[in-house]
Amino acid sequence: MADVQGLLSMLKEIKVILDREKIPFWLEAGTLLGAIRENRILPWDTDIDLGGLKKDFPDRIKKRLTKEFEKKGFIVYFFPEKIDFVKDENPAIQIHLAYGPKKGYFTRQMADNREKSGKLLHQVYRLSNVSYYGRFKLNASRGSIKTNLFKIITFFPKNFKKKISDFVMAKLTNLKDAGIYYINVPESYFSNLKKINFYGSLFYVPSSCEKYLEAQYGDWRTPPKEKGPWVWHEHGNWKKVYKKEEMLI
Image (cartoon, rainbow, N blue to C red; front, side):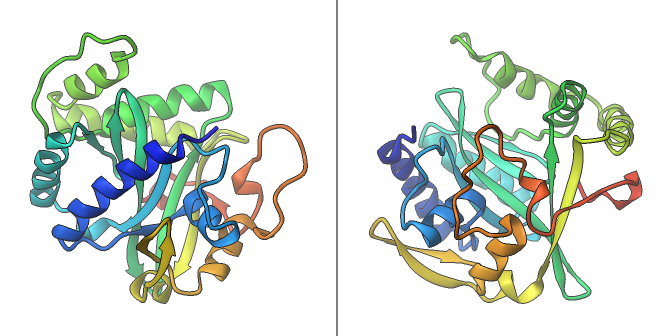
């Protein structure tokens, strides 16, 4: 079950900092779905999904944001396709990054790691692509192994990490079910954002957000009735990446 008050508290902290830095962001993925369909955080959600543009997060902004978020007790990890804001060892908020625009479209990519081999490869990918700009202080708390690994791997040579990342990405494209998937989004959806009221605060959402939800979820208006895991890329307009050269992340 969602810790709604805890998630909202962290969301407001992140909103204050991003607004102050004039970095546009919007409600994304499951959080957007909950806001538009039910005007709430979905009961089964354990984190908050936001969206942003890759170009709005150069290194100088990443360093400044890290400093500001550390004051609020967050640890921030940057990946090519998203940003994780971690509190108490749990990813509480993530910003999914859109690449582009190119030829009138932004592109988002996500990994499916349901297969055991895919899950392992995706974790290696994350380790080889993580960037950490905060204070280097290893945590001794329970469950902090992954956090410490992310911090340590930052000091590895870039060329070494790139070789590992390229190898892993080539393997991911060959997996039958798991792998990397992408979706193309009309440029206007993210370039012309609109505001909605969500738990008493104004947040941006993509223009034509109903069409955007349909592109992600298919029939987003009807909650799924089937039991078991919901395979997100089997709905909407997601397409599998089959060549390493096609990858953005």
